[in-house]
Image 1 (cartoon, rainbow, N blue to C red):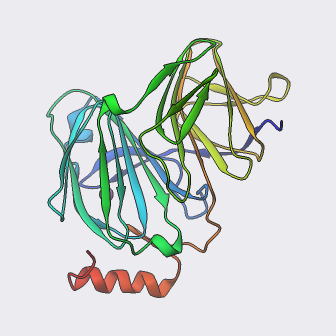
Image 2 (image 1 turned 45 degrees about the vertical axis):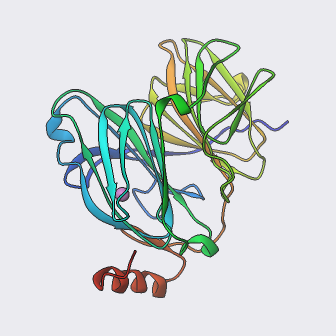
Length: 285
Ligand code: CO
């Protein structure tokens, strides 16, 4: 057993996106701040409608997957295929842009708390031009389980081992084999989990600070910072004195060249230029 420890911190930075939604971006704030196959992680969290009401009006994507995970709030998703889906507290949407999607995500509330994440997951070269598809995942489809040492886990993608039990999330069978966990720990609680040795792992505490690694070698990671972990096959994370909530993401690295321009993520510059031409001529989707 090789426990993973903290290798690098990617501090989140305030920014705006879409129509002017205020958010914090950790992964993806620069081209180097990625954890293959994960390209970007945004957290949006506000009780002030001015911070989110502009939403994300129609915009394109090509070459990767977008995952929206809502903690609080209500957004409506609509795309060029005529798909419409409600994103509600505790639900998620896993969208494969593939060759192209044009969609919007707009708040369905004028007050109250809006809080959640958007994660971008890369696609292998051979899948970048496949047809767009998406999955709306209702809150009740995301399994949760109590942790042996206190606390709770929710599994959005992949399968978690909790004691003797296997907890399978609704998203399975993707090429990047993502594990997407939402973990809540009480004060002083500890979470230990196996991860594939060859996969890349990062964690993102959104409430409270966490300690990563076995006690004698643990490093602290503060809320709103992404922590990239060293290679290994186990993860051990402890909460501080106020408890903690964090996302844990693991995935199989693609190890392919990345050329990104805004909402298009391809392997070569020529493919990006093609995406622009396709978008401008109405051929993206
Ligand atoms: Co989008």
